[in-house]
Image (cartoon, rainbow, N blue to C red; front, side, top):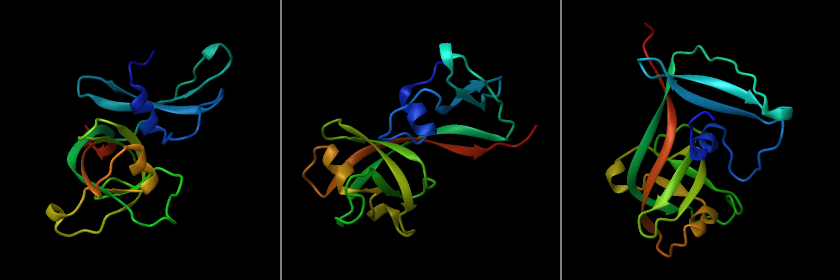
Length: 159
């Protein structure tokens, strides 16, 4: 109906393991206007799938980010034993990242709960995931190549 993907809705609403229920509010972003500025619309599902929209007038634009690099898993069994959590080099806390293994093309969604320490990023992984998320990718090595995909807000100059 709004020409957006399920992956985008999952990312925008931080939906990982919980089902969507009747009456839940969802954020839906659409590209509008000649300058491709994003406007946020909040939809509340009611009987007959009626929608109530509210416009966001902030000066932000939602941009897609794609990265490729080395990932690893956190070697600590007390952290996220049944959650898909991650530390990322610079994605904001709360961001949902789609992680795809280059080796077997399996995908998992993780929620960023912190940032990796700054420093020489050329020698460090771009993301550290919980062992739970890592196991869903079906990998055996401690370090592996991944493609990351997520969205983040960027301030745009006001006109």
